[in-house]
Length: 380
Image (tube, rainbow, N blue to C red; front, side):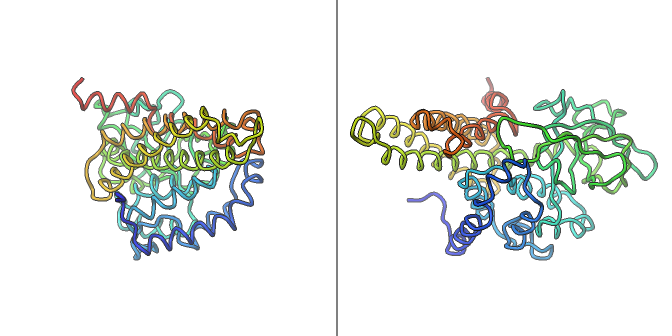
């Protein structure tokens, strides 16, 4: 029995998305990997087809779909073996800060563009000396009359080059209590004092535009603050459950994808006069990987259902984020080994899959931090 019950509408949506990706995205992946960025026009194409921000209410231009539509988009993009178009980051991690905490005026102003792909979003939390330790961030927000003045630097910001709008976490140096000093601010591209740095070269995710962002006496209206003053840290903690769940969704989908094409390769590739899949050692390798992937899928689907029901599953999601991303990297490494020398060649899918999956154990909170969260709630 399936844990998740997809409707006919969900399945039609998945088929439509898969056809779109096969036609519009897959043929251009190599080109974008070389250029290091996805053209903005393809964000707009995703928006035109209704594949961005699927949960946004109709009054703001969205379809008002449930969380399963977000799951479908994440899974299908992942199974293209492509990380450049960070649609899940935009739709399910960045935009929810606007839809959940924005004023009605902010929602009217920004959400329609987020749905259409005309507005690409980014989330700026990480700093050169403050990653998982958000309370130690140095970027400051100082009130000056009806304006906020931002100063600081953010790094490893996905969509950092393409972004039109950034949700920036900054602290008021005048507030002594660290957690009450943090707020979230909307900063539009082109605002004086806001500068995008050079694109960061990475081991993987070559077509994902990751950059440093700089704020130098960057003045924004006070109304660009999301919600009440001093509530930013709580807002970040509230949304991290979904962010980390999205990471787990991508990890399991990637593991399934890598295992599928590796099984196909082992059936077709021959050595010593027979397919690789007929060697007992390789059979055992595949069965062990398939077992881990199935365990991950079962755990993940349970959490997807509970998250969609609005349950607080922060601890379970932390466990899932660390375990599924660790598992996906184990699968990637074993799949590459089964490809032999070809696995180390760019023309084979496993090469990009192997290098792209590595970062999932780092972002959205390192896996060590995830274990620490679970340990704390277990009273250890």
